[in-house]
Length: 268
Image (tube, rainbow, N blue to C red; front, side):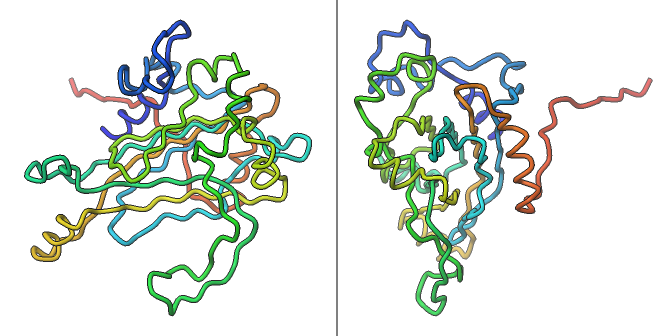
């Protein structure tokens, strides 16, 4: 169910003639109108869609420091491209907690960093001996130029772009859609130069109420989730799909194509 829900939301976009202000769209019409099934499962050669499904226990993190960002999207010394990410998870709910009935949250960060560094694992909360230096989450709206965004009139700008700042609010569905060309000139220099490395990070967060219950009743807190992330060349020139596939193999990711059909045998 999470995969189906994520696929539908990930494919959704808004009608071009929608009069609802961009800042009000998700409140009034959600994430838009989903595509047809053939369109949902189709990937053009100019984009690659990755799906990550897992059950993340409390205290665990997913920190992919070798994210397969395709070098073919480097133009004039800077990374370019459109990134669409949809995160759907199964939150822990407790109706007795009123407005805090949603007791768990999942944070996702995607971005660039300068280099890997060694970390002191004897310090509290540091489990990974390798860390990221100069890391920047690119899903933050304050990195983007309002002037550049207003000047864009293409399909992505009118129908897909989403820069919702969820902050510390607990939303079981989160979606981001950004165009790297819309970063401010200063931020492009800081975070999109061709020497950057790329990362993807996920971590669960829980309210104190459910943490106390879990401790008293001795059970493990966890959240099942599905993350879909698309990398796209808006100019439709570079074979993004091929390079991302090559990098997945190069970085030793275990991966497979999603099943889009199943044979059903009925004994007669």
